Each structure stands twice: as structure tokens, then as C-alpha cells.
Length: 217
Ligand code: ADP
Ligand code: 5GP
Image (cartoon, rainbow, N blue to C red; front, side, top):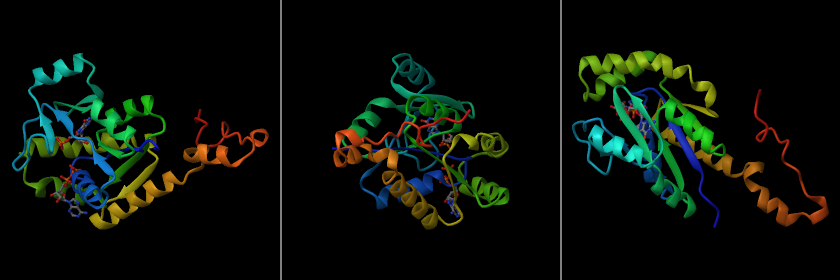
């Protein structure tokens, strides 16, 4: 069985990552949404083991010491991390796995899994972003302002991503991410074994210089 594809989705707080990922997973049973651990307290309506594994800071740091995270970061004064075991298990079973993580975490994933696909979700405008963070109605004024201000820094990291999706309409954003997934699965670089089965030993196709294999710089 082929290993699943690792999909990283980042974007400023309030862009709609959670909303889009939820719909994406509902529509695609072969997608697994990795539940992160966090030391942030739950928002109204959030459930432990569903939205996050809600931990105390002490519990989080203990797991970090044990190397239990694929990546971790401190974001807006709280710790967030991806539990690695489940991600590996699901990938090995052929599931595609979504990590909804910040730009610091995405950089770490890029260092250990260069085959992962990196998508940056954007709001249609900064005004929309402000209205969405505020409209979510789950954070106080100070938190809202901090998150909005951080959006500008996060945008500076966009060069580390492969694709950009504007979340104007949730269904369209989901559709675009599905299209990216499909295109990635058809990419030459992900189909090397099919190629090697088709060609004779002496005619081996060398993809080592393919643009997707060659790093810039
Ligand atoms: P994030 O996970 O990126 O912080 P959320 O998924 O919590 O963002 O969405 C923030 C707010 O914006 C929520 O109230 C959500 O319902 C709303 N929202 C998400 N996508 C859209 C969209 N395409 N159009 C309008 N509102 C949206
Ligand atoms: P929120 O508090 O709004 O749920 O998330 C705040 C930020 O933390 C978002 O940018 C979200 O993508 C990021 N985040 C959530 N889980 C993780 C994680 O496991 N690792 C990292 N690095 N960031 C995460």
C-alpha cells in the first residue's frame, strides 16, 4: 500500500483554517486531521480530544522532553505541538494527513519531510480577516488584536509554501485543496515506482535533476 501524503496548512488566525479543514475531512474519509496538543485553554464549544488535546503547560513540556512531537511551537503565548505517533501510523496506513499548524511548525516539518505539501490559506482581505477574528466571538479584545497584528509577520513566511488558497468561500477553498491533493498525487516525482515498473532496467528514467527534486539556492 502507498504511504499517504502529508499536507500542511497554515495561515493567519481567523482565515478559516479550522472551518475549511473540517469540511475537507467530512468530504474526504481518506483524510486524517491531526489533533494537536496545546497548553491554550479551550474556547467556548471546544472539546478535549476533538479540537485539541488540552494540556497544562507542565504536561506539554513533559511530552516535549519525551520527544513526542513531530514539531512544536510557542504561538500567541501558548504551546502547540503535533503528536508524532498517530501521524506516522496514519501515513503508513495510506491516509493523507493534514497538519493545521503555524509557520514555525511548518518550517520544522519541511526539514524532516521534504515531500510534504505546504498550503497557505489567505483571507480575501485584511478587513475580512479582522471581521472574522472578531466575529468568531471566542477571544477578548487583547487576544484579537494580538492575533491580527501577527498576521503581517505570518505573511512574510509565505515563500516557504507551495500553494496559496484564498478562503473567500469555504466550499471553493475546499475544492481547491482537493484539486491540489489530486494534482500532487499525479506528480511525476510521486510516481517513480510506477515508472520503474514500466520501463526496462537499461532505460531507467533519472528524476534526480527534476525541478521538484532540485532545491533553490
Ligand atoms: P482559523 O482556524 O483560521 O483561526 P476559523 O475556522 O476559526 O479560523 O474561522 C474564523 C471565523 O471565520 C469563524 O467564525 C468562521 O465561521 C468564519 N469563516 C471561515 N471561513 C469563512 C468564509 N469563507 N467566509 C466567511 N466566514 C468564514
Ligand atoms: P488557535 O489558538 O487559533 O487554535 O491556534 C493558533 C495557531 O496555532 C494557529 O496558527 C494554528 O494553526 C497553530 N497551531 C495549532 N496546532 C498547532 C501545532 O500542533 N503546531 C504548531 N506549530 N502550530 C499549531
